Structure formats: C-alpha cells, structure tokens
Length: 176
Length: 176
Image (cartoon, rainbow over all chains, first blue to last red):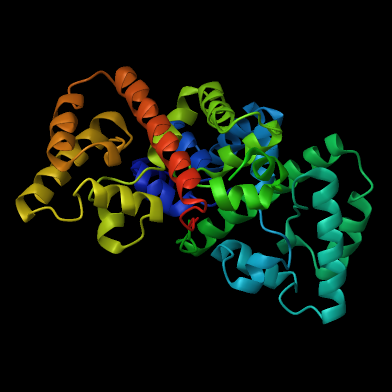
C-alpha cells in the first residue's frame, strides 16, 4: 500500500483496513481518519497514540478492558478477533498443557481482581514461558504502573498490526 | 435488574450487558465501569454522555463513523449488530421497495460525501418516511450542526438500548 492509496480511502475503507489496530476500538481508528492526509504510515500510528494519550485514565482503562484474556474464554469459545487469535497462536497459547492453562487462568484472575483490567502484552513478540514470567512479575506492580505498562503494550500491538497490514497488502478480515 | 446487581458486575459482565449501548464502541462502556458504584441507571447513561462530550471533535466524528448506514451494506450482508438490525427492522428499513432503497442509498452517499460520517438517527423512534424526510432536510445543514445532531441521536439510541436491557432483564447478545 502506498501513501496515495492511504490518503484516498474514505472512512469506511479506512475502517475496513485499520479498524482493529487497537483491539475492539474502531472508534479510535475512525477518529484518526479526521487527521488525513497523512505524510507517512508512522503518522497514522502517531495520531492513534496521541488520541489514546488524550483520554482520561478511565478511557485508557477502557481500552485495556476491550482486550481478551490470554488463553481465556474468547480463545476457548472461538470468539477472538482474527488478529488476537493469530497473536495468541504465535505465542504458543493455543497449545498449553492443562497445568499451564490452569496456572495462566489463576494468574489472569488475580491480575483482573487487583487492577480491574486484563493483563495486556504484545504476545506475538513473546512466548508462553516469558508471558507467564512477565505476568507473575507485573502482578506485583502498583495499579498506576500497570496502566502505563498495559497502554505501552497496546501501542506495541498496534505497531505490529500496522506492520502486518503493510506487509500483507491486505489486513486480516476484522470481526467487530 | 436492580442496582445491587449492576454494581456487583465485574467489567466483563458489564461489557457483556452494556457493551453495545454506543454502537461498536465498547471502549466507552468499559471506561464508564471505572465510575461505579452507580446510584441509578440514569447515572450510567450520564457517565456515558459525559465521556462522549469530553472527546475532541475527531472522537465524536469517530463515534458516528462506527454507525452503519440505514438500509446499507451491513443490512444487506447480515453483519449489523443485533441492536441495529432490530432498530432498522422496527423502522421498516428491512422492507423497502427497490425505489425507496435506491433513493436512500443516494441520500446516504451524498450525506457521507458532504460530512465524512454517516447519517445517524434513532431509527426505532421513527419510520421510513420520516427518516427519508429528515435525511433530506439534514443534508442541507452545516457540518458543525450535523455533528451535534448526530451525537444527540447517538445519545437517544443509547437511552433506548439501556431501556431495552432493563425491560428485558437480559440484553441482545452483543456481536463485537
């Protein structure tokens, strides 16, 4: 995809392509369309990050709450977005042993009870052992630190999804 | 549903029930969960409206862009959310004559070209003739007026969806 194509997209096409770069938050992509024309693809990401940063704490917590648990109920029931499904698969979370799944479920539950939002990590950049280690460590943090860490991971996931769209020329079909 | 049930919901349950009171914007519902405990159901709506009002113009435009066209491609392809499907059905938009559909498609296209977001109206409170009349009239407005009108309709839709949830005791299953 080139810049001309990007800047010629109406909002519907833009949403079809970039609607899930922030998990289940097409409203952010839809808002960012107002900022066109873009001088680069990085600028699209930058506008997304600026929009997120402009939100109050509750809005940032809201973004985290739109993310699925790792190896959680959406994975079991097949209701993950295509992007999340692929990311969790790549991290090995679709092939956990029963003991690993049980341990992850327990840690996820403890994390959600403590923070009021799910543990978010760019799973694609990691593997199941590192994810388990990271989750155990982050469970000890203060809520304000975890909000920052979670949003930083949301941005990493966004970057990887944009890269994926540019590499493949066409996105995963978004299920929203 | 009573207040005790409302205030005892974890964010996942809250999203299951109220996730689509703003069309395809679960992030808003998810943000508002941070404001619990609520002293009434009106307060939930009030917090949603305050969150929307706190957004920049691009964010409000983004919310409108998450709404489907009336009798548009999502209705044809069966990809409307359950809530929108029911609202468009009640307004008679699932039983248009070919001429009516053609006219509505033309008006929708003109509207989107002029404003950069779709025509949003609380369809459930209206019928197809009134909707067509209103769309024709609103097409003449300035963009700043239409943004206000569109967001006012978003709030009406939200109110009706909350009423529906309270009346039925359980929501439409949300497809997000």
